[in-house]
Image (tube, rainbow over all chains, first blue to last red; front, top):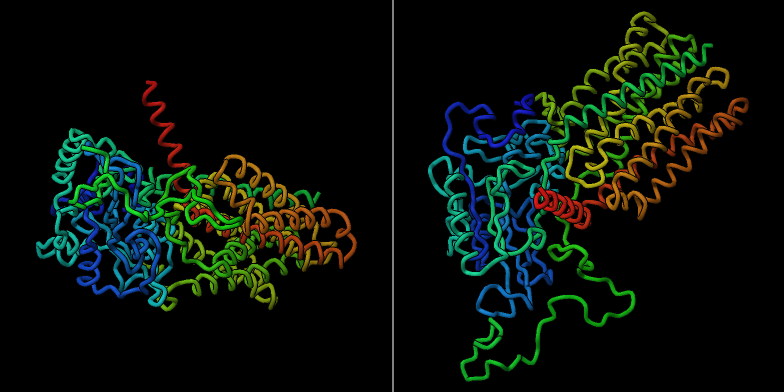
Length: 282
Length: 341
């Protein structure tokens, strides 16, 4: 699986099949429709409870109702709150708009964290998701700067990296992930990715017809820099407003070019030493 | 319907009245001089100015230190092999011993930086070309034994033929050890490290050559250190040129390489490396004391450059500007091209 880089970068493609699963279920994903998120944080709580994630010191951030801050080793769902005065949300003429969005690991089609993991601790599941095997991870931390979304992180008191598993244990027995289960408005929808994508297109059309011109899908396109994400979003403003990168690219896309440059530089170094040696002899 | 606040729920017919106290929701009001902006100025948008990327969990002592030591070890082994084949035993022995010590330091740094050091052998579970760290593990596994054997046979003066074979093997793998680390840091989403992937291997090769030359100049007698002096000069010039090209091509992303902690370290590294290289070509040709000083300057210069690049990378991932602005520009460019065609 490590050698089919070119094949792997050809979209569209099925990550589970490419990872060697002959028979596997449909690729599962999240569609987070932020237009109906009410900021209740039930997803954050349900995730913590189900996955037995340790708490982290509570503080006051001054960032609207968001005192969680962002995704991290001990935060696998994070609800963002954005206050926008002087912006109209729709045709109702409101002067103030409150954006809320529940962020999560994107479970990328081309996942940089998975590509760079040197131990094989990170792996692709039969559902097409990306999961860390905690008994393998040696805490090298390479996946952390590799992730273009800033999702995966190292838990310092533990030494290993942690992130959303899309509740791999629940999926295995036909249950939906804890966050989706607990979402009271169905802002977080879980299901087969192809079906979710169709549903999202329909919802986007509906919003555009209703006059919400700023509505846009994020991560739904298999032609984007990460091959589309397993967890994608409907946003009401530009991605960076929610703390998401506007055009993320899987870093390993450039790895063949990097290795070529390394080979050139290594050859040049060898040649430089040879030249100095020959120069000194004459 | 009149324009009223969506949060206004009064039913007594005073809908058009504004509340007495309104929350200040964005900056721009009167500020005291020198007061820090809680949210950066809006030449780009972000979520409360928070970074998009996670902070890289590597310590500078371990990982920037390893970038330096790995470069020193790899290039020293190649220099040692050349010196061995040319019959310069003192230079060869110094370079072999230096390479072995730097290799030992590298392994310590790499294991020490792990979150779970006891599991370092898990690195050998897989062989993945998509992971420069995995490839680096295998490169080091191939390089370590011959480099160690070369040093051991040189210091003890025993088993010369095995020593020769080990020296040549380590010398051939050395350049890979010295340069793969460029792919290691470039294969991340850290703006400065990733965007510089074209030049980074040459910066690292140059820096490694300069430091190995410096070690040779420092440790070998002046009569034998000729190749080390030349290598230091070539390395210093390569590094200087590659850094310049890198900074020019990166545009606004190069700012952390020029400003702040990274900028100071980069400038210090450049000054020390160039001074050391020039001194090596002039005063250090005759005078042993000057040679020691020149060699030390070259080593310190390479160390500063590696720490500079490391810290510039961290700075670029802490500030969302370096993630958002280039991506936004890329999108706008693509849209512009799309609408024209």
